[in-house]
Structures are given as C-alpha cells and as structure tokens.
Amino acid sequence: MFFTYFQDSAEICQKTARLYDEIMHNSLTDEYKEKALKYKKKGKLSYKAILKQLNKSFITPIEREDIQIIAVQLNKINKKIAKACLNLEVYRLSTYTQEMKEQALTLVQATEKLGEIIKKFKKVSDVEKITKLNIEMKEIEAQGDEIHRRAMRNLFSGSYEALEVIKLRDIYKEIENAFDACFYVTDTILNVVLKQS
Image (tube, rainbow, N blue to C red; front, side, top):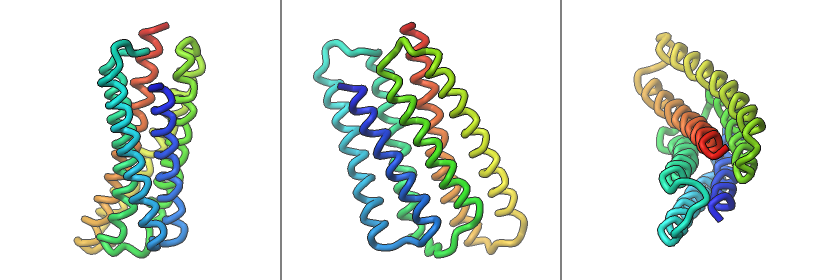
C-alpha cells in the first residue's frame, strides 16, 4: 500500500514540475494557477493518506520512520514547486530568466528520475538498479547546483534592481529546495534498500 502511495505522490510531483516548465515557456495564466493549486492540494491529500495508513498499520514493509521521511519529502517537493508557480504572480514576474527555464527543465528530469526509483523501490532486491538510478540522480543534482550557482552569480552582477534580486532569488531558492528534497528521497530509498538487502 505504501509503495502505491509513494508512486502517486511522485506522479503528482512530476505533473507539478511539468506545469512549472510549461509556464516558463509560456506565461502564468489563470488555468495554470488553478492547476498549481489543484496539484498542491492533491499532494497534501496523498501525504495525509500515507500518514493515515501508517497510523493504522501494525506491521510496515520498511521502518515507520523511513516511510514518514519519504512522505514528508515528497510533499515538500510538490509544495515548493507549486509555491514557485504561484509566486510568479505574487512577484509580478512576467518574463523569465534563462536560468529559471534551465532550472525548470532540470527539475522535470529530477522528478522523472525520482519516479523511476520509486517504481523500483518495491523490489527491494534490485539494489544494483536503484544504486545506478541514484548515481544518475546525483548527476542531475550536480547540473541543478551549477545552474543555481550561475543564477546567483548573474543575480548579484549589478544588472538587476534590488527588488528584482529579492524576487528572483526567492524563486530560485524554492526550486533549489525542491531539488534537494528529490535527492534526499532517493538517498533515503537507497539507504533503506541497502539495509534490507
């Protein structure tokens, strides 16, 4: 049951990441805002369903603490991306930087890789494949870190107004936090699998 919930949560994260990427190539519309709110709500419901199942389960397939950590981080990924989508309107950002677009594309790759790892998670015996996917996720992480560093360097180059710096830095940080949560989930899964193998 938990593995199904994890997959559901990962799929919601993928949809929200794709939505953010789509917004970066178009602009924020009312339809996109509605979708962001819908995905945020779906993510929260999925998180609550995991906790509810955890509370009524006497025996769990993996340690209770690991289930809770994974559930919390999956919800965090979704919340951060949805918040970044909605903050585009709050900050009145109608044009998006090259780094924002690159971050969005890399985030889609990260959530897709996360989905792959979670699908393999049910087969705890597949340590080799999960390790390989985790290494691939680390490569995506390195790419995301490089984009974030470049974004920060450009942001403080003196080309932007102070208010613009605050707005963009916040958006970059939300997406960076979503990345971090993705990598945290995959690391947790790998540790669980190694413990049980």
